[in-house]
Length: 50
Image 1 (cartoon, helix red, strand yellow):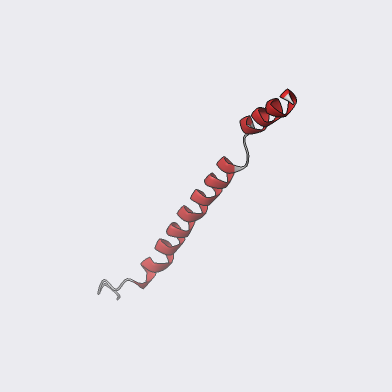
Image 2 (cartoon, rainbow, N blue to C red):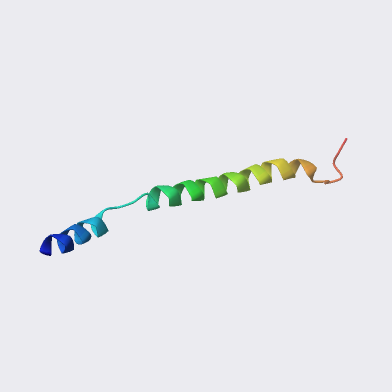
């Protein structure tokens, strides 16, 4: 059974999609914030509407 321990150790060394998902989540959150800022800035009322 030493092969099982080697396989488990090798599997724990493999990198999954964690980093990619983290980056995608961060980019989507930042994109949502920028989109919200861009859309909501048009609704400001600065009393400068000529």
